[in-house]
Image (cartoon, rainbow, N blue to C red; front, top):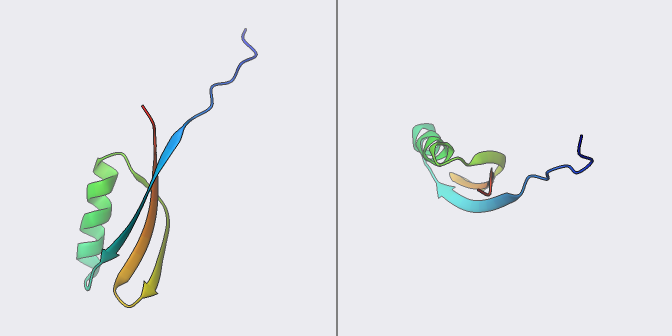
Length: 59
């Protein structure tokens, strides 16, 4: 049995999405999820403007 642990390495992606309708935001989130990105945080600093922080494991 080995005493070493494998540590996961992440890459991060921050984007601003301008979406006047929820469906547009959902489409963008689903697109990125399909590329392996996991949404970590989202806020709305201005009306219809969403800042999203994603991560995924580095291959």
